[in-house]
Image (tube, rainbow, N blue to C red; front, side):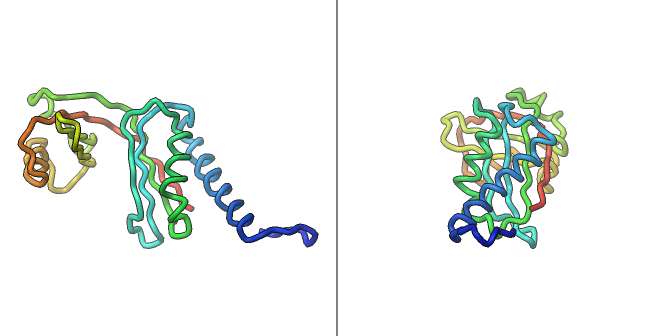
Length: 169
């Protein structure tokens, strides 16, 4: 980045300018694939140069726009790890439905759908990603989740599909 000699920029101004550039770069790239004014759930995962996960966060359903959620992710998470972040994956929720019928759940292809599990008391929730190696059948996934998190109560299930968007920085 070159600045005219007669301009005076402090390091904080340059850093602020680079932050604006990053968030605008992300918005621009996302806007090529999805309407930023849509109100869809999104999963956000940031990775370093070695592909190690630096941070992730998500919202499944929302009344906020993707642009607004992106700004919140940026201000709350990404801004702190911006220098190490080399790629971001956004999984935009395209289709979601509650599905508590056990017979229907058994037919859900776990290689194509995400599974969102919520305790009825609303205190705990978990997400199972598609193609999770140890979960080839819904029964195995539910059993493993209940055992791992010591659940004794009832749970509700949502199944959903996402559109994956990779942004290289």
